[in-house]
Image 1 (cartoon, one colour):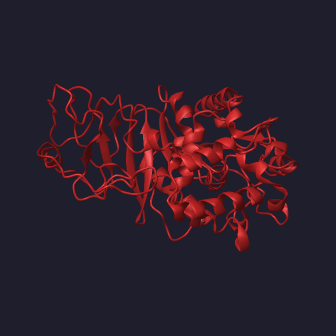
Image 2 (cartoon, one colour):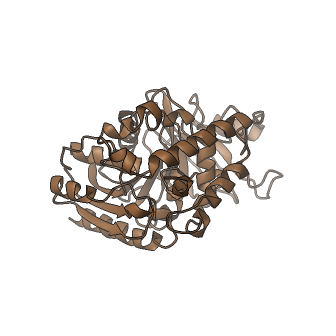
Image 3 (tube, helix red, strand yellow):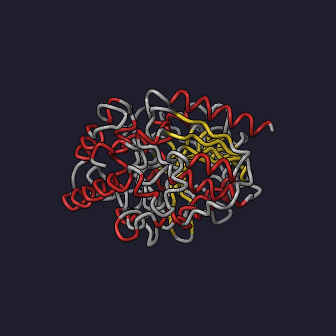
Length: 415
């Protein structure tokens, strides 16, 4: 394989401008809680209009990578500006009331008009269009976004290696009017903390932390490595997993000889080598964007011929990713993360699998679907011919992907 494989989407996307936490919180209504009411009464646009105003739970750490974290703003080139001094108004907000419980949660709202907000209690009941939160996994702070009504059925989205939760932005917008949607950044990705280990078990642990925060049965949607994590959770048959929707999982690439058959060894080697150089040079976001936009695609042409907004997201994710995430994927430990998948265990919940075209860089190679169906005869497998590794972000297939996902969610919830 050569650099023509560089379109395929387990290299991920995290739009710096779109998902720098709280930048998307534009239509928030209110936050529910029991300790007092905060009423911002500013009626005219201040000089900092458009800047998110942080509501920080007292004595808890800031959102990793957040503008209102205590370490200052992170710029597209990875540098940080000095933290802003808190205004008297913000100090008043932060001192307005205590919070019961010890969940590590950071909330923020952007105000474009007078709003009424209440600090949350220990639960995560939020009446808002979207908010960003931090959840703690044994000292590793994980960034997540929550969309939709608090009483709607929850769906958790998991991204692929070097992607971020932002890759699901278009998908979530189609679902939030009916469901409670959660998107998670794995450790070392997006706005989550870096960590000392990046084994499959660690990614599974991150997802389990999100499930615990959700606190009720969930449908899990995963792409690539995120799909493998969802699959492992679906094997355990926990009561909080209703069903799993797996987008092109590299389920069997940990088997001897299978990793080398795929497009990923060459692709990941090229990407990781460039990342090292660019991080040393503190390369700007435009360097990453030019790379992902102009990489040749096995679907024909270049990546920008097939992938819309996600290119900027992809570039930002690569810029933010901890390069140590590659250690168990390429080189001497090539494929070790995927080798940990217990492929000999059957799924214990409803499942639908999207198989991208192996000729176009799909991760579920030819013949893998037969092995998967033999072990999981109840699972539905849908093949996307002429589609690369990321159908949800590919212009020609995103509508079909949404249709298949919505059909699965509806059938699972009504079953």
